[in-house]
Length: 75
Image (cartoon, rainbow, N blue to C red; front, top):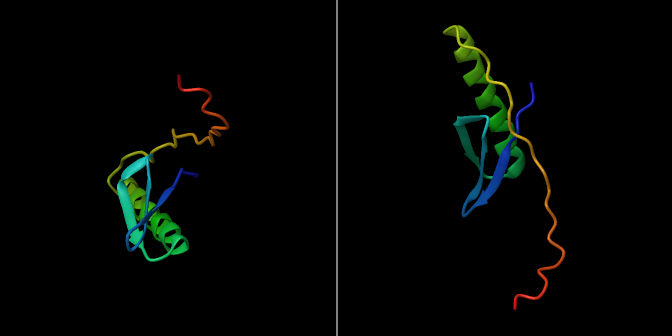
């Protein structure tokens, strides 16, 4: 399974979450540790869902990089 991970800097490290499973979010001192902690949190959450008979959420998020090259004339 593959899920989109959002990793954002904070004033004291990084926070990470997946829009596909918004109940899972983590904080860590480094970007790499935040990514690894999120991976583990997602695994635990999915395991719990399976234990109670619920389906594994499918990834629905897509990512894109949007480049703004010119703002043109604002007049």
